[in-house]
Image 1 (cartoon, rainbow, N blue to C red):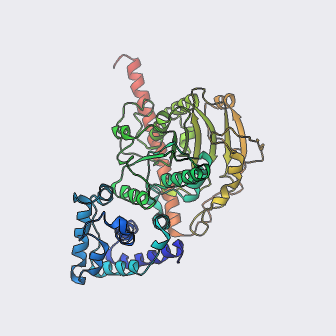
Image 2 (image 1 turned 30 degrees about the horizontal axis):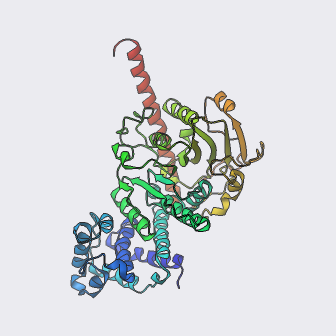
Image 3 (image 1 turned 180 degrees about the horizontal axis):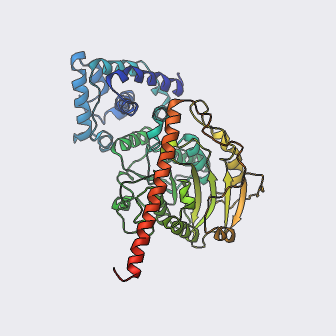
Length: 477
């Protein structure tokens, strides 16, 4: 049996051929999504009964060459809107269409897929293959892929530490292609098998981009995960009311300009903020149930911004036990435009007492295609974090020369709740100095520009709010 990585590489090479037809990497993944789904259904006969005759893989393969492309378009249309198609499949194919213009390119894809036999290993191996394609797409379209793809080592570490279990209601309010939901499902299934528990876990999420939502539904379907609580919508609008209250939040929300303010009344602190990161953090703080736990990937400015940023941190520190911050190594999220961290917290009326910070950023290698990030790089942090999901396990302050340190609530207050704390001297002056790939260099430049733009927008918002407050004080409002 060919390994999933070999299959991914084999399928991905076809993209180079299809680029001649004007097809981009994301469009190629979409086409593979449709065709691989039809082939998978054909290989699992019980599943194929959910697809009407005339819309199946065999119908497409058996069609005359001159009619294949027209039939393919009809199949996509039918799977998306016919009443005799299972609802879960209609959700995946709603609005689906092909960008293929040449019938020969469709035949090329069909022939390549038909020659590969991976289905005898079952649905999970197919899901692994699909995730490999999503990751490949993220690597090849690095500047934009970060909108919906989080590196698997980061996902798996956060899931491992927060220990999703039977009975949890897991939420990703910016679900992307579903990496956190899939990993949480797999972790809980393994834990349940060991404990003998049959209590279900609810997986919920929301994604605002239609094409990404399609990839999300496909990813969940291929991992045999119920998508009833996974929605197409904007979490920063009234759409969020569809989501059940979570006991666990795992998310990497989008960063940067949002193109408008949140359309929600309950985000009292960030209601006027026109960027993504602060409103998403406030959503997580307010949505989480008492005693619930969360891990959120955030850019640096969430830790130090004044004004609305400081007010949001005050809310977090008072209504949650913000117990751990992981300063992530550079080069992971160029697409979002800033350096990143993970904030771990538990919803608690007692608030925060001690904050532990692990600096995995200082003196870190530069990660990229030539030096991929591996999960073993997080081993030191996993050990330091401890065995308890709420961060209350045994911990040791490693001192000024170590990576893991403890800061009391009093010390944080003395810093005006600025949580952007570093103490290690970084021996590498410029972490981007050794980048050589043109796309990596372009992405790095775009990252710094986005970061600067985000800072300017934050300053503009604060100036606007100060002006309004001054007018109000003068009695002109």
